[in-house]
Amino acid sequence: MAWRIVESYMLLVRIESMMALRTFAALHAWVRTRHVRRVRRVAASRVEELCIAMEWACSFYPKRVLCLQRSAATTMLLRRHGAAAEMVIGAQVLPFKSHAWVEVDRVIVNDKPYIKEIYQELERC
Image 1 (cartoon, rainbow, N blue to C red):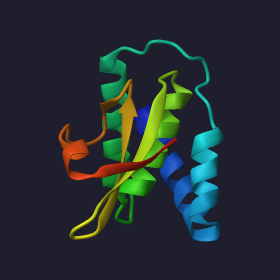
Image 2 (image 1 turned 180 degrees about the horizontal axis):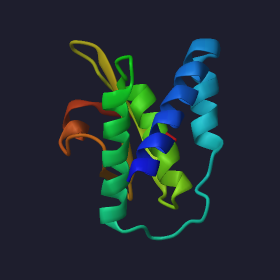
Image 3 (image 1 turned 135 degrees about the vertical axis):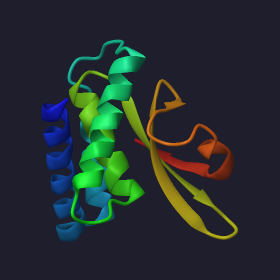
Image 4 (image 1 turned 135 degrees about the horizontal axis):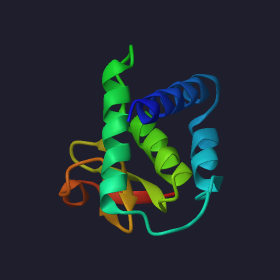
């Protein structure tokens, strides 16, 4: 588990630097074009373990990790380990809010299960 937390932390660093030095479009393209290493059915317990590792990495991170950074990093972590994860970006109209989360097989894995009722899906990558 310790190695997964370090791996998660390094993904957070990489994505933060990408967000600081590049555009949102570049981050979106990076997540969209990185495919699953080996597509296979990954056990729900394994997906949960990787999401927990990301949560630990976020808690050790020196800055507040926002949903886009966390979701991009979680998506990339899950894909590295064979899960067909998708980052989903959604919005709420009134009051306007946007949010990002991760799904595996259309099931939300890094947020509350009712988040789809609050936010309308805008993009899936």
